[in-house]
Length: 308
Image (cartoon, rainbow, N blue to C red; front, side, top):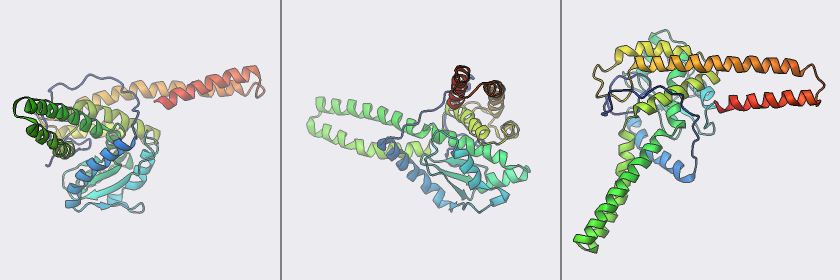
């Protein structure tokens, strides 16, 4: 299988990664950067990635289409509106590939393989499991994982090029130094291709898991579907821990189960407290001192919910 930003299904791993998955932690809410420079990088990376899907006959999934019985674009719309980047234009595409895969490009395009929809339909899946797959991919887009990788590689290449230019100036003269500097433009193009071809780190995959499940819950889908799906994904795991990008499905399932236990219980507590405060507030005249005190508590709880 070509190197690609895969969905939750870890069918093949191509990048060397550590054998130990990152430790469990609750990831913070991402703060996407949407400057003109970053948006330009996202568009450039996406253009490189999209070419491969176009070669596989990728086609736009219309809002009224239901491939394999799934309301794909409707699910994408529900999820995208509860992300930290609701203003992106999220569009779903279908491409032909027997392997169950999915990818969300940096500019908001989402690609689902025919194998993914066929796999989910074969499981008798409800839209909730497809929402889990798409939510995970949206997590990569919202957290700008490819942009961060591009910026990291760009810094590394720039530093290497500057060192080379300095060495050329010192040993071979100014003309050689100018030639070295001219190579920076070529390096930028090469970097775009490297980022488009690369996989995500295990840390990024786990972050996308958590972000995705948050979106699934906010959009009203069943988050427990992720646990069932990951349990089935275990049969796809590469037995070697050295050549893999995704953490093992069992680890991802364990971490997500822990995350759901901690956050869902907390959310229920907050919801119960909000209901009690609103009930108490109705006992006082609107605008009274007691009413205002309760209102401040309700607003603080609302801010806590929005931060999640």
